[in-house]
Image (cartoon, rainbow, N blue to C red; front, side):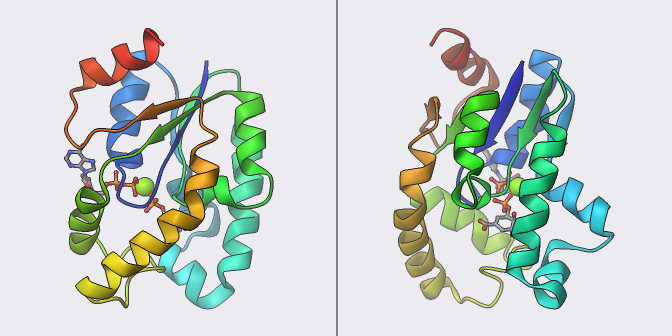
Length: 167
Ligand SMILES: Nc1ncnc2c1ncn2[C@@H]1O[C@H](COP(=O)(O)OP(=O)(O)O)[C@@H](O)[C@H]1O
Ligand SMILES: O=C(O)C1=C[C@@H](OP(=O)(O)O)[C@@H](O)[C@H](O)C1
Ligand SMILES: [Mg+2]
């Protein structure tokens, strides 16, 4: 089983990833953490010193490297499906799940965790909402190509997994 968790920043990819991997007994990878380990640098430092293009190259190549395994669950970064041909690659190599809570829920979560995310770290609360609306509109066509969608702000692990298993 090869599973990719997708969705916007703050959707809960990292939050759900470990729980779902435990449930389905799969090796778990958070793609951002894999990049941090490989680069020995925080995501915001990679963006600041090496630039976003460098980050996207690393993200795509590590996604492909991890995907050579037979079984895994990967929590992607919010931008992963939207660069290179990553979305097609994931749909060809595994099961894609889009975690898609309300914009309000994501913005509220992101307000508390801005510093770790270089794309939003300098935005005040008003600009953050504006950014999330615009970026989501840009990225939605990629996320929409996912095989499964979970659109709920509050869902139990049991409901989440049954939704996927019974689809
Ligand atoms: N369903 C949820 N219920 C409660 N808290 C959540 C939920 N999803 C995410 N969070 C919290 O919101 C923040 C952002 O979630 P995270 O999993 O890091 O998002 P992503 O990896 O999709 O950017 C984290 O502090 C996380 O614990
Ligand atoms: O949306 C994006 O482009 C990004 C999302 C982040 O991951 P999360 O979605 O886990 O925050 C991380 O990969 C990087 O900051 C870029
Ligand atoms: Mg994450």
